[in-house]
Image 1 (cartoon, rainbow, N blue to C red):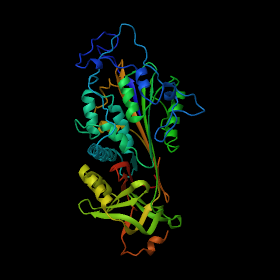
Image 2: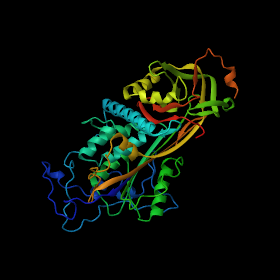
Image 3: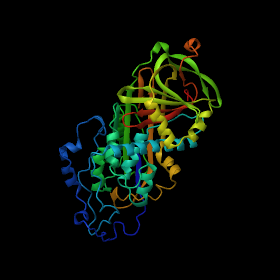
Image 4: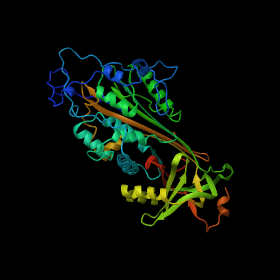
Length: 467
């Protein structure tokens, strides 16, 4: 979720008449009115746009107990005599691609995998070794790509580079939308804005086209707006994330929300009667007994990477999804070396090799886990490209005073048990040591992987099951 606020108005902003930059395309010198755009969003008419029926992957804000925030139906009035300054790039054609080619989808998928590892590594560098990590690369990429619609100039180039999109890559938003259409995954996007913020019709049109985001006005009542935002998040995540925010920043101007809910079952469920207490080795701490799912002959695609000295194991979930774990072959502190040694080509190659490796009966020990972590994405983005949002060019979002990104809140929740995965013991003594084994009983890295699209949905590490 992104918070944006106005920055100090530079010379030439509203209040100072400014001549628009001439354009070779006469029809692009004036933006269409929001009324015209909403009429064009057929079959949705204006009345339906305010209260559209809920569909999978789209969540409406609020519920029956809270008054619905007013949906923007037309651009706010502009003071008489004021000429809106042009926004660089507005005379360029917008992305109209809604049917990306296979090659375009594969390139965006590869970019998402690259972004996932780089973002994870920056998380790991700033965290203590015994800290659990979790985030949704897809959800964060959806939020940043939504913001990319309003970015211009150097900000647009730098943000695209962070996301792994090469210059000139076409159909990014259309491909990303199709990649997010994953079995068991519900994604939703929403816009809350200050009533006097002049959202640009082009941004609103593209937000709806690619992210199905509806603009809704903030009331100015902090407690009511906070309640509405948290209700939207709770509904969009099916209650898995009941609360995202504890407070709003001072005078919020624009709040971009994105949420995902994921649920999948094991292709072969673990038996609860075989869940036992087993010791989990921890970095810098004594081992701790944790409830561990076990099986003597569980189908696993597994191999050892001799260069990284890591065991990679893939366990199948429903809908063509998998849980891939990377368990270091060494002491608990060995995970840090693996994290630092990984690069995007190696990371993606390991996941692809896991997808192509045949399943074999394997002795498995996998801890139950429940992770719930929140973070500010802006801080991590600044680690990747310092200062990106300090003086960002975001005039494609709104007319009037420039807006700046205050914060982007991300919260991920994941539960792993005998039935499967939801986002938001004595048997070991009788194991035959000659059998294939996958024992995740020390800190390990994990990825929830969509094999069909070759993209990571969630990624993290388990360092301490009791933390």
